[in-house]
Amino acid sequence: MRQMLHRARRQGRPSPLSNAATTGAHTSVDLQLVLAVDVSGSIDAEEAALQRRGYLHALTSRRVIRAIEAGPLGRIALAYVEWGDREHQRVVVGWRLISGRASALAVADEIAGAARQVWLNTSISGAIDFSVRLFDRSDFESPRHIIDISGDGHSNDGREAPAARDDAIAAGVTINGLPILDDRVVPGGLDRYYAEEVIGGPGAFQVVANDFADFGQAIQTKLALEVAGLTP
Image (cartoon, rainbow, N blue to C red; front, side):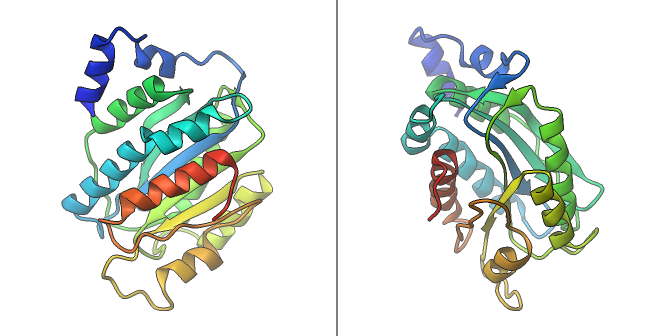
């Protein structure tokens, strides 16, 4: 990813990092999107690497870039969050403007350079509550606010996930899901759990990743749909 960013600079294109970081107060965008990524103890180092790599390739894919550029304003705002138990969430990359490949590469480079942290438990409600508060700290304005939450297990810490989901919906936020089935046996199915207790709001949907190897393609599909305002 860093090689792609450096290559863009050598080719004389404007600095994508400056494009991504310069926002200005109350910049209008088509969408404000929080990518909320599970880094709890059930995800090992190899799985975490596959997961992060999937996001990096999806953000810079032709499919997603075209979806961004095709919007009414041709730009979105994005924040990347990693989360574990109810006390531990962190903003890996704060709100950034993405309006094309150069700015997408800059955001991907920031994500790629961040150190990995791991927390033991899984608090989906904590991730939702934390992500909702990020919209209050945004300098952007948009008709749509979405939290894109991915994970490989049930919430087992903090308040119940549906309570956080319902509060987010009341605040005008849609929650989409990307359950990672992997090889773990989850009673009732993780995809069903996400459908019934995690996602919600106008146009809410989920895309299922069958395993971590499948995650990259799943997140690319999901991001392209979210940006375009479509559902599967």
